[in-house]
Each structure stands twice: as structure tokens, then as C-alpha cells.
Length: 290
Image (cartoon, rainbow, N blue to C red; front, top):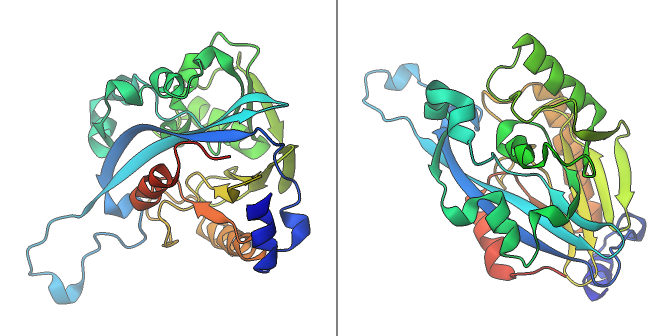
């Protein structure tokens, strides 16, 4: 546990990093496609016009959004999957209008969830548990691969499950939640605590704002240290406030303050939901994290 000890030596509070994964735990970063959208969706004030520049010609900036999953090989729990990506049928599920708004611009055979898992030496049939940061289609659409898997536990925050099903039933948040993967027959598991010890080495944190029930996953690895995978709480590493996709900005701000505190007292690495440079750096650092 040399990395965890190094964090403590740098000022981490030991009780916040003491829940360490057992020896033999490892995780893989799975790249599962790329989206692109107007910057205004993901950055507060993105592509805004100004009175002083109203006569100038401009081109709306667009942002690339890589999608990734984390496959965890846990000695006690089996194969755990953090999120699923958007699913193979994403353009068909969204339809032509919404697919033009959130366009999938890169999706090759190796980005399919089955293929990405197979590249780690595992099979999709090996997955025992899935943790979903939030149930928007680009993070949970791949649940359609598990519609007949009653043995697979699907873990989300209680508020997220309620919000997602309510949104599909009423059409209140049309587009981002889709009926194609939000099925009552899945083996849903929920919790409602702010902090929830999922298993040895993994803790889940409720971070509302982007959605009411968004969660982040803290994983303390024996040799590579602490990581916070935060879904779409932040799209980018710089923590710029969210644009049109934010549902509750005051809640997002409070969650951001809490996350910064957790980062400070653990000395862990925060991994945003769609940051290109962060994903590329993770892929460069290691093929397998132990």
C-alpha cells in the first residue's frame, strides 16, 4: 500500500483512505466512444453573446466528450463495472434530432461495450455488479446489454432512480433519460446515504447538482492510490460550472465544495466525466491499475 501511505505522508487523513481494496484488485479504463456538443451545454456561459461584440461574426464552439467505463476485478466481489457508456444503438434510441445535438462522432468496433470488456481478458457475462453515477443515456445506455441478466445488481442512488423513472414516465426531462434501458425488470439496488461503503476499497458519494441523484465513486487501490470517478458532476478537470445540462446549480456548488474537500483530505485523483486530457493521461499512465 505504498501509494496510500505516500498520500498520508503528504497530509491525507488516514481514516478517509483506510478502506483499501484487497491485494489482487485491479481496474481497467474502457474507452467506449466519443460525443460532441455545443459548448453551452457543458460550460456555464459557453457561446454567450455580448452587447460589445454583437456585430462580430462568430462560430459556436463545440466540445468533444469522450465516454469511458471502469472495469474493476475485485477478489471478493467479482467483476464490477462503473457505468456503461451510451450503448451500441445510441443514434437510433435518441433519434435524428437529438443525435444531431449530442452527436456520436467516434464509435468503432473496439468501443462497443462487449468488445471493450473482452480486450481486458474478461467477458460481459462475467460482470456481477454495475454502479451507475447517473442514469443519463451516455452513462447508462449500455444497460441494454443486461436486460435479461437478473443476476447483475445495478446500483444507483435512490433519488437518481426515482428521478429517471419519473422523467421517462412524464417526459419531463426528455432525451437524457430513455426507456430503452430504464426497465423495471432489472435488478436495481439503491442507497440514500450521502456516503456509502459499497465494498472493501470502494465508497460512493452523493453529489447532487447535475442530477438529483448523481454519485461519484472513490476507489482506494493498494499500489496506485485513491481515485474519484465523478461521472458528470464535472465534465472537465478545471471544475468550470455546468451549462444548460445542470439541473440544480446551488446543489452543484455545494457538491463541488464537498468534492474539493475530499480531494484535499485524501490527496486522491479526481477523474471528471468527459475530460479528454484526463482520459488520455489515464490511458498513458497504465494499462491496468493495481
